[in-house]
Length: 268
Ligand SMILES: NC(=O)c1ccc[n+]([C@@H]2O[C@H](COP(=O)([O-])OP(=O)(O)OC[C@H]3O[C@@H](n4cnc5c(N)ncnc54)[C@H](O)[C@@H]3O)[C@@H](O)[C@H]2O)c1
Image 1 (tube, rainbow, N blue to C red):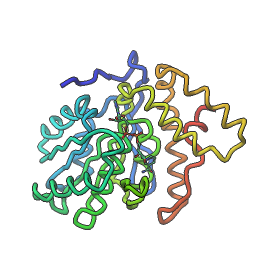
Image 2 (image 1 turned 90 degrees about the horizontal axis):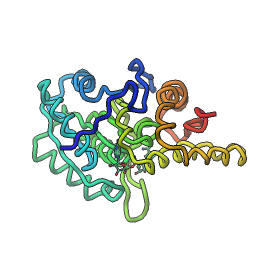
Image 3 (image 1 turned 90 degrees about the vertical axis):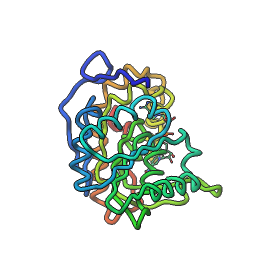
Image 4 (image 1 turned 45 degrees about the vertical axis):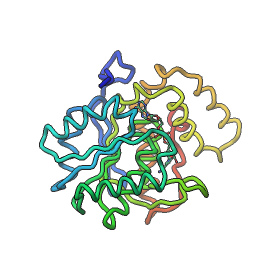
């Protein structure tokens, strides 16, 4: 197992800061640096209350970097954890994988008191959240986002879903997570391309602002990761998630409005 060396707190590219909780409507995002090994397991246990089983789902990239360690640490505090590793990439977000996960959970006697843990990028969050939304008419899940896009966008709004041959995200459900646990140190292994992808998604929501302003954000894509990552704690805690929280609270029930800020707003 090649576990990433990603201790925060200086030298690693992401400054240490006090773990922070941002209220997001009926659930909260917990943001920290390097808490995934030690602080996440007891928090997951607390959030899961009396869950009989925890279903940890991830992709093979995250398995290689972090999954085995998280599995070991969850088991170490006495949780009954089932672990399934899926292929990475958008093609996994499909009906076939969803059915496979559901059948696998049935075969392991997962009941309504199980909790799904979606560990990975937006693909894992969308797929696993959708499985949780329908399994035995809905069981709780916790978002453990590892990509920038998942941390600032896909894990936050309660939207889950899969792709079909007719189009992307055409099947899905609104299913709010119990919580979103964000550890920024996980981003240290995210390829630059994926970091840019997440920034693009955040900037996209500003497309209705004036064109010159929108275009002025493009140079960000050539910034090296080393200069972007240190900005993230302030950006996420100070701007992105509070704005998202405001947006979530304003819309009831879950509806269409999108966050009007994001990365673009936080770097101005
Ligand atoms: N639900 C929503 O509101 C919402 C919003 C926006 C996008 N989405 C969905 O999100 C998906 C895209 O998410 P994504 O960009 O995270 O893609 P992804 O989940 O495929 O992750 C991108 C790649 O990065 C890898 N990766 C993730 N975290 C890593 C890390 N910390 N270190 C190393 N590698 C890592 C993954 O294994 C994968 O290969 C799309 O399916 C899109 O439809 C959903």
